[in-house]
Length: 296
Image (cartoon, rainbow, N blue to C red; front, side):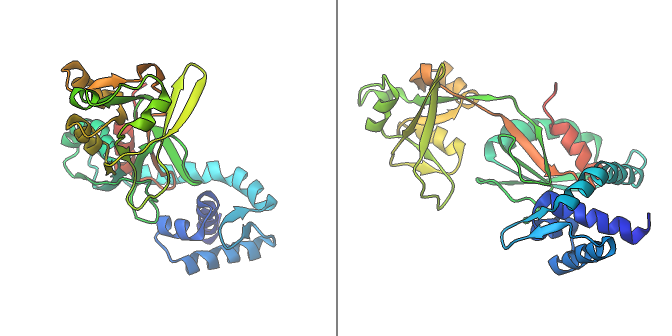
């Protein structure tokens, strides 16, 4: 295959997977106009339209989908081989930029990077704590970490933590001030500590489950935070009830500083996943991905 054709196919693959010229251009490190010109050239050479473009999204045509299914696995294999061959030897260098929620930074990144980094002194990892789902392409991160495995097109999701049980907790001093909830609707009479991103005005809902029955409770409270550790501290201070990952609350349940509330209604949520662009991963990125991956 001619070099230009290979470059054009890689550009098409990036746009088709990202579903956006803007996101694909950010991943590839080129301008949106240059990428659009490349795709138009490929379509001209092939004599067929490969992408349907709207003001909001880009999607492969029927011909584009056939091309994508045919060439994508082969191109990704070639890209992976080139990346590994280009970084031969034991020395791995480079910087991997990660956007992660605070809970993931503490429970996943800190312990696992502590085992990885001493073995690769020229590898650097920059972590930014974020309190919302990050567009890693637009903000130039290599990896994002968030709850669940639902990611945008062009990204790969890899589990880094098991599913987590969410629990409602309160300090004994707070619970002494009003009746302890016996059913989910009783939460409406309580000061509930809310966790939400900045400037998010949507109603806050706690999803509870007992057996096959699920209940959505729109809770209210005076204290709102965008970080789960701040919610924990507020609960410990007696500000109200908090909805937290069980492993975060359990030490304080054991020592008596917090108590479970509505214990039969605790739901299980999909665990933390990292997401990253699968195109042209560097050896540094692959090392970090392998280190963060949840062991089988």
